[in-house]
Amino acid sequence: MPQRTASLDEQAQEIIQKSLKDSEQLLSEGRNRQAVQEILWLLETVSTAFQGLDTGSGTVQGKYFNKIAEDLRKRYKGQSLDQVLAWVTTLHGYLSSPTGGGIRHGADLKQGVVTHPNEARLYCNLIRSYISFLMVEHERVTKS
Image 1 (cartoon, rainbow, N blue to C red):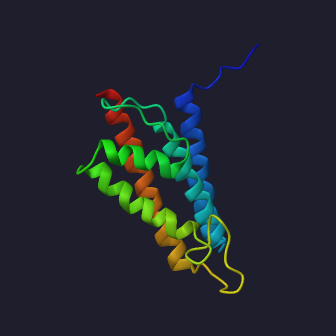
Image 2: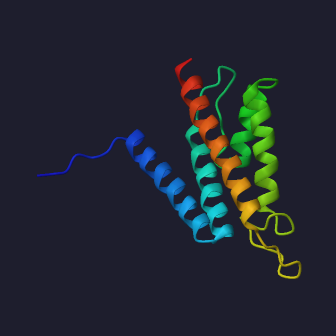
Image 3: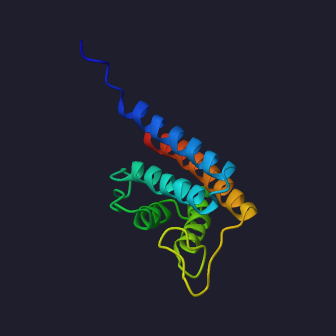
């Protein structure tokens, strides 16, 4: 007997919940950089739900986080989504830089970037709130 296959929405929710749980577990283990990496990965993953979205003035063409955010910001200029994407893009850029957070693209070994527990918790909380916002916004814009 074949098992029931989870719908795309169910599969996405499973991925999201597992990644959130994994990030929280990593924080509790003191694995700060890995915790932020996990939730940053989730942010990038959630953003792909906007690919191909018809915005009324075109479609979201981007395949990666920065381009998707840029496409959405153009369409929703001056609205909450535009501002939130500006904030999240700034955070993403900082965390991606070897001389910034050193999370996504590695750390500058000469500078020795260390992610302290309070910083990791802040980044995870911010990114978690951005993910939540983007998920609700995705539902809102796809229904309108």
